[in-house]
Image (cartoon, rainbow, N blue to C red; front, side, top):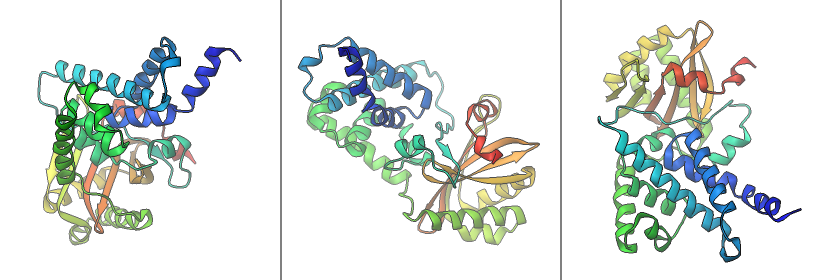
Amino acid sequence: MDEKDFLAGRFEAHRDHLRAVAYRMLGSLSEADDAVQEAWLRLSRSDTVEIENLGGWLTTVVGRVCLNMLRARTARREEPLDTHVPDPVISSPDNITPEHEALMADSIGLALLVVLETLTPAERLAFVLHDMFAVLFDEIAPIVGRTSPATRQLASRARRRVQGAAPAPDADLAQQREVVDAFLTAARAGDFDALLAVLDPDVVVRTDGGSLRPSTTRRGAKAVTGGAIIFSQIAELTRPAIVNGAPGAVAISEDRPISLAAFTVARGKVVALDILADPDRLRDLDLTFLDD
């Protein structure tokens, strides 16, 4: 084995971790892959003799690449960001894929990713690297060009916003699924009272319809129930799915998916519902398990 093959093998051992970091930073699977590939290119051009901790070095490189990508994304954006549902990681409830296991080792739901979209690039980097991957502030500070105490403040501000807007889901996946199934049953039956019983009073529903359809955010149980009942009448059937480690559902009409819903269940109630209804992005999803 030559030196380049040996280095490639060492890099591959860190790929899943790096992709998880990049996905949390960017909320995009394709951009996460681009960031990981850029890290490999930088590694292949570097003097590895001086790298004492390869995993730490690669994590820092991916963080820097993602920060630049987020800053470029922000600079291109002329209008305030509409409701945007990040790329979901989907599996059949009966067959969790290795990709899903790797990305969701310490689960991050779509609701949390949506909140991360509202942070500044530097806040997001500090929060993701420190709070999710235990990178020291002294190592994060040079990436964002700030002192360690200032970087700590970035993460602290991000943490407060995340804790206020993205409740931690209940731990028991089976109990979460029971709540989601109750929601879907009530919606199909048009049972207003049953829907209210499973919705948190302050539930938030975000719908990303893409460039050709309006994206919306609704708040409050009563505002959500009517929409849920109307939409359930449009969908011919709903298939269960696991979306970012939590119960979800794919709505199907005329043999094609028309939406993907990710539920956040906390304290036995639906506290957030993130819906991807962008037809272009739905076509790109791997939903082959629906054919089983």
